[in-house]
Amino acid sequence: MEKQNENNKHFMFGGCNTVELAERYGTPLYVLSKEKIQERCKEIRETFLQKYENTKAAYASKAFLTMAMCRIIESEGLGLDVVSGGEIYTAVQAGFPMEKTMFHGNNKSFEELYLAVEHGVGRIIVDNLLELEMLQQIAKEQGKKVDVLFRVTPGVEGKTHAYIVTGQKDSKFGIPLQPEIIESAVKQTMESPYIKLKGFHFHIGSQLFENDSYTDATQVLVNLMKHLKDHLEFITEELNTGGGFGIKYVDEAPRPLGYFTDAIMETIKDACEKVGLEVPTIIIEPGRWIVGEAGITLYRIGTVKEIPDVRTYASVDGGLPDNPRPALYNAKYDAVVANKIDEEKDQIVTIAGKCCESGDILIWDLQAPQIQTGDLLAVLSTGAYNFSMASNYNRLPRPAVVLVDQGKAEIMVQRETYGDLLSREQMPNSLRR
Ligand code: LLP
Image 1: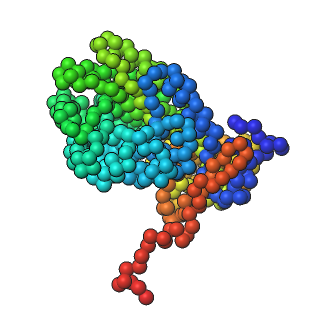
Image 2 (image 1 turned 60 degrees about the horizontal axis):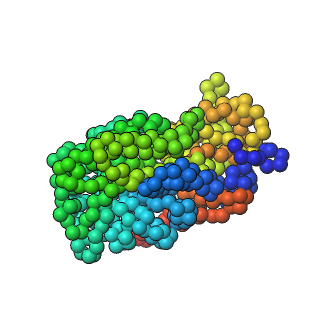
Image 3 (image 1 turned 120 degrees about the vertical axis):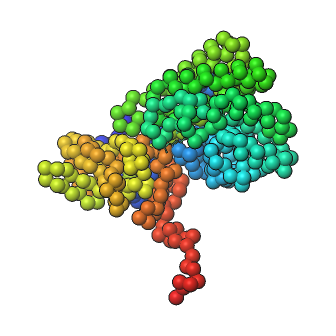
């Protein structure tokens, strides 16, 4: 944990006193540390990009995306993985170098693909044959040749929550690895003047801690590369092995990035050598691993309800709308009482959100100091998939996002207002007074 302030009472984050941040910007508040994001990007450069030739890394922006985040990622030298027209638009508006973006998704629309080609997205990760057809038409119309990867389903099970595994055979993502299906798709691109197939992509799942599913899938892909070389003389130039590297929420023991990337690199080199293939460029695309631990959420404690001999509930001024992960995935979080960092944790308290929903519990049984109304709670590791999955359930305005760096804080996203909640509404004529 970061060095605390002089009297050691307040929780510091990014060199800022979180109690002061809450007073200045209100709560709930997402706080993102630029330094922590930069540390992760540095680790990617040092243990992967600089260690191995022909490697690339992109940030999976679905974890957290704003125009400012695009800037940080650009200045760290990484690419950007985008999955929708909205994410493409954000990157374009931020002036992100679009040739360093990769466009994913299992049901990209014609309009989204059109936008992607128009803005020169670097790689389109083709997920199915309908998309391939649309892309040929769009590329022809725009007079461009589009570089693509095929996402394939390697048939490997990641060990994580069932909602976030993706690499198993029975998955909505990717082209099935059946020789006739994949061969015919590859052939189509080889004959197309509009599409250049550069290679393949797989993504096993998210919040993974073991490297065996990556190495198993890499081996499956090398078999595919060999098969396509032998049967179609197709040479795979690139292999994207996805994201998914796990982070610490409560008591997980995360591995350094090199644990995963060294294993992937070793496997690809050995497997290619065995069958006489050139090692393709290897791409990784972590999201959560870059931004997850770089974020916290600050909440004000309101009601404290003690049910004698049962449990104490402390309710916060946000919850499910700013962090749906506990309700969705049974995700666990840790937290500290930010204004009582020096006090003994002699109480067990359950942190409840404020939504009309019994499932809106952020943390069951948190070990904490004596909590009172008005205390400030900092929930840790909320940087990934909190802001990006936030909703207005119960018509709660979404929190502001503040970027902290070496004691300075700046707004990255304004807090929503009640006016914002109504801004797209229109009263049908039939109901006007
Ligand atoms: N690449 C692809 C193709 C993906 O589908 C994903 C995540 C990533 C990369 C980045 O995965 P990461 O490194 O962040 O684990 N909402 C869920 C996570 C869904 C992840 C979806 N795909 C959650 O809150 O846990």
